[in-house]
Each structure stands twice: as C-alpha cells, then as structure tokens.
Length: 74
Image (cartoon, rainbow, N blue to C red; front, side, top):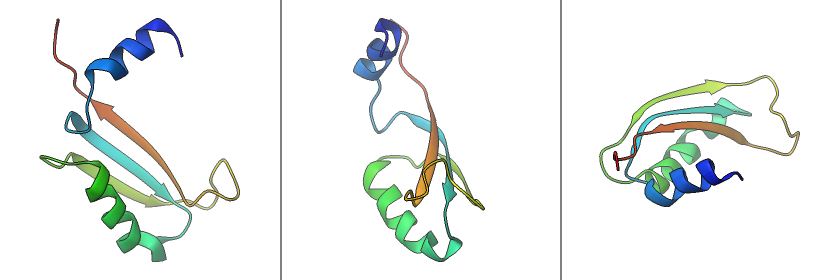
C-alpha cells in the first residue's frame, strides 16, 4: 500500500462507513452475510446494497465487498 492509502486506514474506523455493497456467490447465504456484516460494521449502519453475482473474482470466494467511508478532515 502507498503512503496515502495507509494514512486513510490509520484514521478510518469501522464506524466511519457511509455505504457498503456486497456481491454474494449465492443469495441463499444472505442471512449469514447479514450476521457477519453487523459484527464488522458497528455503530450507525451504512446504506447498503446486496447483489447475487453469477461469479466472483476468486472461485472459492463467498462474498466480495465495497465500502465507502468518511474520514475526518485534519
């Protein structure tokens, strides 16, 4: 990771997400995904979208995710 990326991760926290998207290998795992999501995205829940994907980047993967977070100005 570059310096800019590590700097962002240093000030971001799990409570900063504003939007989260998940791509599931199978929609049958939606409840399981929801349980894990609530464990990692604490505080006020971000806006979320969940999709069933025909394929993910890695064949063994169950979920791919994207999170947009807000970090405080310095």
